[in-house]
Length: 298
Figure 1 (cartoon, rainbow, N blue to C red):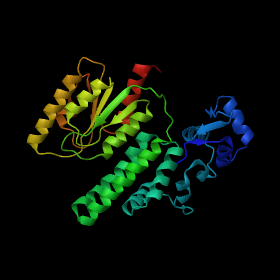
Figure 2: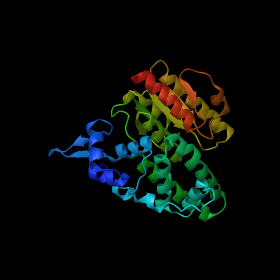
Figure 3: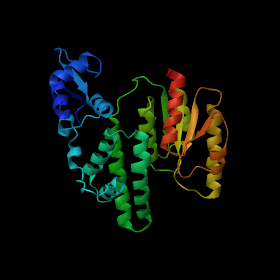
């Protein structure tokens, strides 16, 4: 995927004149850098921001390095397009380009990163996850869909403009015994979109490793994605480990945010200034937004 575009490429992609695009750059409405030769270059993420804020249509997505937008399913006149069903079918059948096209188009239409995770990707992956228990083919489909979703999220992150190149650090992952990587990747994408410099340690991360990483990087936020159900004894042990992690962070400026399908009810109900439970990515984004404003300023 291209990262920098000429004003001519952006202008042709969205159907405006090159002179208008250059004027917007000169007026500061579009952010751009200049080459050593003095030529303007516009990040793809900035071109997408322009489209999202103005509602201008993308006429030639391939010029933005987004040919997947040409692969969107055609809508039938008079029929409601059920994007969730189309996405589920594309993931189930391994149609990666179509998955990317659907997700990219929804972001360009105005969906936030959190909304894409909560309303599109998570519901589809939860339904595909049910196939795991049916047969070997179900496992294959689930693994392939997870890989496609992960790659789609990574690509989508390049379209999201950075609020700051030096935002406060956030570190997270899934605990030992939880090899699921997708929820933590979603959390990283969401918190990155809110201005944090995110470090995703992925699945099977001992909680004390998270604590050490938070100290080393002067992190202001630690997230913990908990999605693997456990026997009562293991859940009690994990509960104690989370409390120990929270106590390790206590007294500093770092906060712990936990979320996922397997968070113990005791932790969900716990009231502590160091701990926040997020029921979904929208709640996580809102909490991160508030923290960012408190640390950096509005």
